[in-house]
Image 1 (cartoon, rainbow, N blue to C red):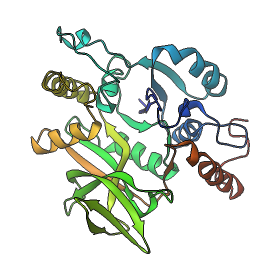
Image 2 (cartoon, helix red, strand yellow):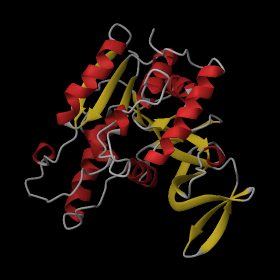
Image 3 (cartoon, rainbow, N blue to C red):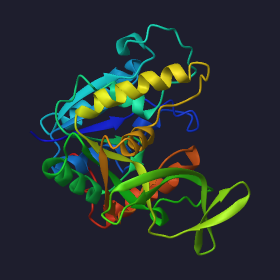
Length: 299
């Protein structure tokens, strides 16, 4: 059974100002998702599942079904505020969805095979998909998961500081911890992160998480158990979010699962603000010009 690609596309995109998940960036208005799915099909994924808000389902189907029909199986699942599905009877007010790890739970009834999770608005490159398929087909177990580690120097922005999950790995290449560094930026030829007004250096090839994770379906039960605890502990914090790195951190520290950090030297790029759009368009134009992708992706 081929692995599944799970795409996190239910975000509000408040900083972008519109639905960046389906905004056009390629020469024929291809979305960033289009390039991820194209790479996933080439790498050997058999199904793509979109996590979206239910009110966007018609938009997504209109955009993606004509392109993907006959190329890969598709499914759509909805992230919502219903806690009763997880056995939580208490009403908890929320200003926004519970985060990326909660989004994964939305797909628990749609995925029965090994799968990987990616962001809708990030470009990852074929190398990551190829290495992830190999891991999911040959190494993944219910206690051995993975994360693609990008070189931090290939994930930075020219427009300001970024947040990155810096990975500490063992000598064998397994995750020991992820530390969120909220102010990472270039300083001349160096890379630094700032904490409490003090700058600390980071090596160019330091591995960081860009939300490219590999799991088996066993992670759904583990995540649901963690989410119940998290939701009740944060019921008075309407902006608290249950992120995927919290799953990794908990499973590693409790010895419930290990995470192989799969290295890639691919260039990452993504979009957060409207001002990022021309940069992303230029990156994709270069990939088309150098032959990485055809000008018309699906024809």
